[in-house]
Amino acid sequence: MINIIKVKAILDFSKKDYILYNKVIVFDDKIIGIMDFDEAIKIYKNANILDYGNYILSPVFCNIHSHLEFCTSRLDYGNFTLWLESIIKNRENINKEILEKEIDKNINIMLHSGVGYLGEISSFGGELEILSKSKIKSIIFHEILGANKSVAQKNIDFFCDRFNRYSNLKNNISLHSPYSICDEVYDFAINYAKNNDLLISTHFMESIDEKNYLNGKKNKFSNYLKSFNPSRLTRNFLRDFYDLKAIFTHCNYVDDFSIFNNNHIITTCARSNRYLGSKKINLKNVLKNNIKLSLGTDGLSSNDSLNFFDELRANIILHNEFDLEKIAYILFKTATYDNAHLFLNGFNPLEYGACADFMLLDDFGYDKSQILIQTILRNKEVKQMFLDGKEIL
Ligand code: MCF
Ligand code: FE
Figure 1 (cartoon, protein in one colour):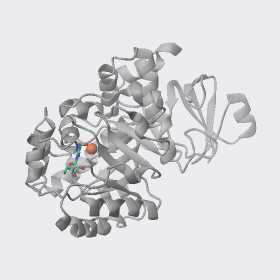
Figure 2 (tube, protein in one colour):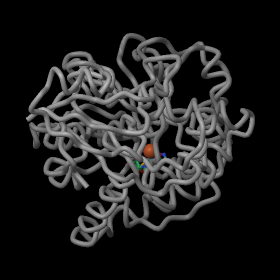
Figure 3 (cartoon, protein in one colour):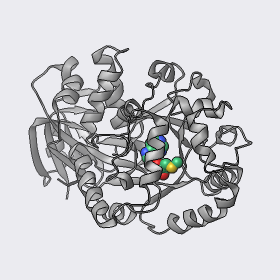
Figure 4 (tube, helix red, strand yellow):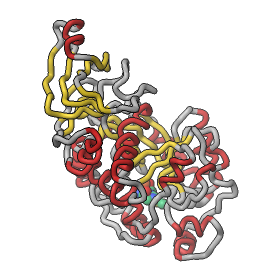
């Protein structure tokens, strides 16, 4: 069935002039084209016409970093070491039934706030079945960690056991962080990513405690990690990432972004960083170095909601080094356009042949220069979302 959707405006970030007026989108499960209504009905005479004439159409949001398995955790905030101690203490006593209900509820919260694409860090595999049945399109980063040589093989086996359990998911890998791994785990993860052509996600330079620890300083963090008897990494953490497609989450304590290259994406999780006591990422330096950027909520383990509009608003407030119009543009384009190809088999959103994935947003009657600002500031939920050409809300 071919559809023609009429809307007030289309946000198409492939164009410098990204707000299109008086255009419709023609689609089935894929995008067929963006054109004038008169042209569309001439070519597609029997098309189904959808009238969303009062709404703005945009590609869906991509939340590239979440931890749904920690939805029920209520942890200590304000200081990274304090938080880490609390998450490790709480890891064991998670009630499976309550957790699954919360995961379901939070996927819904994400979908209703416009998240069609999700990058999920999976620590134990507790969310996989739900995601394999969900309408949200996800990439799974199966996590591996292990600070001590003696646990490496056991953790590798556990990882392998989870990795292929759901073949309909986009299975990829997460190497947790520089402070929670040893050489054996590092080599395994790097080789696994290389040999299977995977995306690899990692937490990097999140806190000042991590940075000081990696520089050999003794602090509360190093003292806490001692209890795991870590076999310190002898490789420079970035050494083997050079030609891997990699996502580095946080990077708050990176000063020189030229250590990254074109294969790399940086994710920022604004609220999580604030809540765990870290400084914000240096966005101006990220952009100056032309490093690809993405946005994540992190989990409820370090956030207060997975509503993506809440996350965008927090970013707007935190990144007061930009004027409002500029940061709204950066955030909106980053969240809807720049990383969508990861979920669209290389297509860009709204282009011919891409999956017909988009959302409809309330229009508050503002003119061009205000649309992105007001859309971020005034929305709590989207009006509707289409994935593969179908209404899903
Ligand atoms: O991104 C935040 C903070 N940094 C690191 N890890 C996590 C975050 N939220 C959840 N985690 C998980 C992580 O995936 O906490 C566990 C891992 O399973 C910590 S164990 C060192
Ligand atoms: Fe995280």
